[in-house]
Structure formats: C-alpha cells, structure tokens
Amino acid sequence: MNSKNTQTLVILGRHPAISLAEIRARFPNSKICARENAFAIFENIDLPDLKKIGGTVKAGLVFAHSLDFPLAQIAEFLANEFAEKSGKHNFALSLFPEENKTLKTLLVGVKKSLQKAGISVRFANKDFANLTSAQSTFEILKKDGVEILIAQSGKNWWLAKLTAVQPFENYKFRDYEKKFRDAKVGMLPPKLAQILVNLAVRDSEKLKVYDPFCGSGGVLVEAGLLGHEILGSDVDPRMLEFSTKNLAEFNFAGDLFLHDARQKSFKKFDVVASEGYLGPPRKTLPDENMRNKIFAELEKLYSDFFAWLDCRRVAICFPVYLENGAPKFFSSQTILPKIAKLGWKMQNSEKLIYARSNQVVGREVVVLAKN
Ligand SMILES: C[S@@+](CC[C@H](N)C(=O)[O-])C[C@H]1O[C@@H](n2cnc3c(N)ncnc32)[C@H](O)[C@@H]1O
Image (cartoon, rainbow, N blue to C red):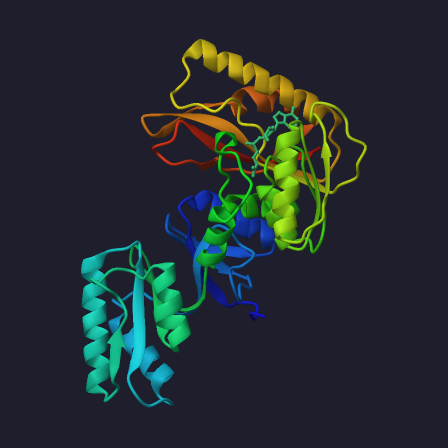
C-alpha cells in the first residue's frame, strides 16, 4: 500500500477526462496534484497493477519533482537502481507530452553519464520515441529493466519509476475473441465497459451490477471480472442468447432475462452500468428532422426507464452525433432535463465523450444519481 503522501503519475488513455473520472471514482479520497492532457499526478492512490482500471495506460511512483532540466536526476536515480547488479542494464524514458527531440537529448545524455560512471546500459526506446505498452511490458518489466516516466508542465518536471502497464493483451483477447456478437449493435470496447462499471460501482468491493440493455454482454463480462454480481436483460432474445454464451465463455452464470427496459423490473440490484441504447446504427449524420425524431424516441425510452429505476448510481452512454469529426449534437441535451424532473441528476462535472473522429455516432458517458 502506498504511504499517505506518495505521489503516483498516471498516463491517461485516449479519452483523458473519462480516465480521470474513473480514477476519481475508484479512489474517492485521492487528491489530484497536477493535471495535463496526457497525465495526472495523484496522492493517495494505490495502483499495483492496472487490471481493474480501463482508462489508464501506465502508472509510476514519483521519485522527484524538479524545476530544472532533469537529466542529472534521472542518471543519479538509475545509477542507484543498477548499483547492486552487474552486467548490461536496460532502461527506457518516456516523456509526456511526447516530444522526441527532448527525449533524444535525455536518452543520449543519461546513457553517457551512466557510462562515465562505469555502468553499462542500453536504452529500449526505438527511434527516440516513447515506449508503447507492449514495449514497456516486454522490453522493461519482463527484462528487469527500469523505465522512467517524465511528465512536464511548464517549468515543472516530475520523474516517476514505471510500476504498472495496462494489460493490453487481456483487452485484445476480450475484444477480438468475443465469440458471439452483432456488428450492427456496435462494438463496445472492453476498456469502456470496465470504465462504466467502475464509474457506477466507485470504490465498493462487491455490488450487484445491472445492465438493462445488455446486448452481447460486454459490460456484464467486465463486471464479472471485477468481482461483482451480474444481472442483465435485453428486449431482443437473440442478444440475450449472445450474452448468455459470452458469459459462459468466462464461466459466469449471471441472472439474464428478457425484458423491455421501459417497464418496471422487480429484480434487486445496486447500480446500473450500461452502454445503453444508442439509437439506430448510422453510417451518415442524420439531418435535423431525423435527429429530432431519434432524440425524441430516446427521450421517451429513458423517461420510462428512469421513472421506475431505483438504485444507487447509473453509468450509461447517450449517443452524440459527430460533424466533421467533432461531437456536435448531444442527445443528452434532450434526455437529461427530462430525467432531472424524475430526480436523476448528472454527477460528473466535465463532459465525458468517448468517440473517434472517423465515427458518426459517439458516446457521451453520464453518471447519474437520484436526489
Ligand atoms: C448498443 S447495444 C448494447 C451493446 C452491449 N453493450 C454489448 O456489449 O453488446 C443496445 C442494446 O439495447 C437493446 N435495447 C434497445 N431497446 C431496448 C429496450 N427498450 N429494452 C431493453 N433493451 C433494449 C438492444 O436490443 C441492444 O442489444
């Protein structure tokens, strides 16, 4: 367990606001000391590995904060790390935000400085670029090497020793090896499914997680892997069959039932984590009329659903349409005022958008709780 004022540098994923919201949910007592787009520095978080966090790419323990160019500090730290061991040592540096010229200066300078001190080293950075998660895993962690994460913001430099890398192979397996799926229903990335569960559950140990729009079961699989009880339903019997089969692949039983989410369910559960229903699949941006029609249908669906819902918290996605690669038309603008009248209020202070610029439909992640 990290001691109280230990600082942890976390390298955020492609959707930094969502990554941060997830960490804050899992560690409500954490304190954020610095934040840039690519990284954040926290006090009071304990991340021995990243298996249970979907939005963080790497994490490391901060060993120095400096207002000067940190070449000498990095060399000194590595010299200490390698002092007890003989042979040639592996090291790597990754700089955030990434900037190859500065990284090259540091890599070459640190190597020279260590060689001068009689320490034989090689660096794992290819083409003076930051290490990918795969490189950090195979070139550093599995080879007894040391990677220093360097975070820069204005004149501030933070130096951290890499301690954890996202288990990218597990996510790939869960994504591509999912046997039963329907491409038209959309492919929920396992990382986002895990994030939704974490946003709903927060720091609780074990809860009953319900996905009322469970589709092929992506969220339910992640809830099961995080150790929660699973409850799922869908209005489409074919999707329910996919869910049942996908859960069986992971040996999760779970309680699955055919159900229209607009109608009250008498099952008991603690939280809802769900991708939700994103409206009909689209390859092109709907015109205003079509958009209004889709948003009105979603407003009706979610008004009916939230009218009967009774649980601690909900983490769900509402669709957002992208224009020229940027999120532009938010269904949440129609849905949220309606469900606010039912007592459900948005808990996240920042907009949490999960989208790629080549998509037409993105997801807005919303965390809700009842007054
Ligand atoms: C975007 S998909 C969810 C995909 C899922 N997250 C997965 O991993 O496959 C939305 C699902 O909502 C279901 N759905 C749509 N309207 C519904 C309703 N009124 N009640 C329950 N399920 C509904 C659809 O059948 C579909 O499976």
